[in-house]
Image 1 (cartoon, one colour):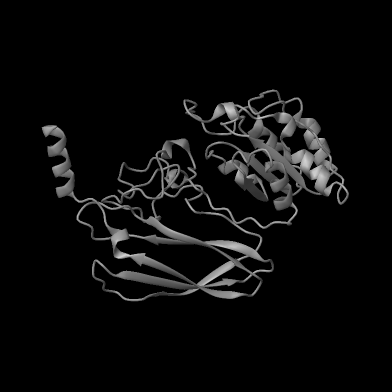
Image 2 (image 1 turned 90 degrees about the vertical axis):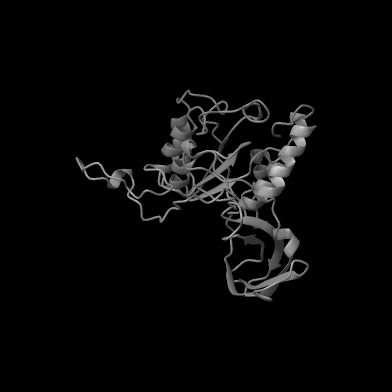
Amino acid sequence: MGTWVFDGQKEHTVTSLAALRDLYGDQVNILYEPALAYSRDKQTTGISKAVAAAGRADVVIAFVGEESILSGEAHSLADINLQGAQSELIAALAKTGKPLVTVVMAGRPLTIGREVEASAAVLYSFHPGTMGGSAIADLLFGKSVPSGKTPVTFPKMVGQVPIYYAQHNTGRPPSRDEVLLNDIPVEVEQTSLGCTSFYLDAGFDPLFSFGYGLSYTTFTYNGLQLSTHSLQTSEVLTASVELTNSGSYEATEVVQLYVQDKVGSVTRPVKELKDFQRITLAPGEIRTVTFSLPVSDLAFWNMIIRMMSVDLLNII
């Protein structure tokens, strides 16, 4: 139920296990093994039972994440890996060779790179609320198709924080050809390895960027067009793109419109989300998606306005 759980009642909450049994128990045989007592549990004795159950299954669904008390106001963590023995559990389940679907319930983005690599698929549900179990069950069994996009940026490692999609550009943007930690020769002479914005052990990119999210189908974008390349301050820019559902399932795509100001009078973000549309398409269906962007939406505070604001504040 998440961090605002104060008046929540467990008896009125549908868990994923209850939903799977209720909605799909007549279609599949569900083997349940708790493995860990709670998210911070470090006791590994139950992992072997979970592995044994996984050996008898066709598909493994592992539910991991955070209890509600671990996130929210005044609940910061310096370590945002999965707590307790959850990473050990995922690693052990992956070794069975069975397809592993990892469902993460958490109140923040976690550094789950290892768990993603070990899993065939990952469903990040955050804290989905009292009916979250039913929604997750329908997504896992394909009654509904995932369309959510990440509302935050997921770091690979906590040392990348703060990391967010609208960060300002640097004087030395990454080329993504930089030499990383494991590629440095032994006893190499001291030298500058790229002189750009990146980490030797994490590179530059996040684990998942803001606005990322997969679906059970695929979408292709073609023919991006702008109404004009020159506008007055009172005019409106129209941007359009052809969206195709190139997969096999009806699904919804979140089409996102980003802009970048490359020559602003002050340093501007590398990209800014200005609009989005949710578009539902049948397999093979094509639709032109159009955005109207007033030039006023591209405005920003310049240095003169900032200086005037400071002067007024000092006068007051």
